[in-house]
Image (cartoon, rainbow, N blue to C red; front, side, top):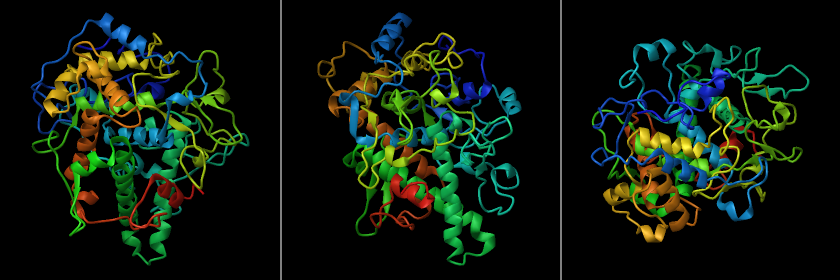
Length: 482
């Protein structure tokens, strides 16, 4: 069964592709998820024996409608929805990670010849394939011909555009491994920061007389391992809490080694992405999105996506275009840097803000809310109820405590759990465990990750606190943050 409105829509194909995993279209392998996961499948089920929840569509429509924030586009989130524990930059690191683990290098011909997409694709990992593509031989457009071990930084020529940007073709489309990382200005600038981090790693290694033949591989390793460290020890720790993460990734003080302890995320030969994670637990980020952001101190707050009332390209943060002049993201507006007061993520919960409550027509022709599309997607995938998953994990919270009345769609249940149990500042016990286990589990399954290769490894690059490495440290090393 497919959710209504999931047929292709008119509009720029890049925009439609960019909203994969954001309610508008399916990533490969999600269209058909067997009741019992195949060992080599891309998507599978964490709780494959739980029965699906099949509520009437009108119930989902009413539930989705109840999640609208009902605010004008571009208005700052009210202080009551600001999350003091999560600056807004982490919302978009989470989106970057989502794109990384669902990166799909298959050609359109592959997709036509593999309609169910259950076997012909790479194992899900967060290893920056969206940054490096298939390497210098197969993805030469990603690399700098003048210094082939470095990634290419774009140079805009027009005087109205900023000189440094993602590399783009003459029509303004980004030349990067994953077009979704150009869907809006913030994530495009984050992708550019990753390019700069790799190039800074090359310069760092040259000062240490690394052999030229080893530069690309070693710079890639440094970039990937520090990124993985940031994801686990900075991002996941913030969104699930230290106590829960330390139960999933257990440190041995005597050896310095960290060992995953997974109770629910299990696979046979290769890991898969559980649909309970992909279509429910990890979609908590949709509730964190503010209606608009101030990129830097010279710009006013702008809405995330184009609206009929603000179609002009300089009146919204939508992507797929060269970066306008003076639109560089000032990262201390998104993260705590040098005593700054950044914009904050919205609280995790059962409210979503415009423009996600009114998707643009080129994403959903009916301009429905992303909340409704998520709920319809969960039903189409046969997700179990939130209560059933919590019971299977031993994390049940009474319905009376959560203000629920009977079996509830998994995505809504997990948001409500975060709202009530954690005050919206982090995930609740059910979603938190799923998110931590899947992301740590993907690292455990990756033979090139630091968890597998060097479980006692710690960050090698300069950091504000030695032995740690945060997103702020990452951006500082990349040279894009003060």
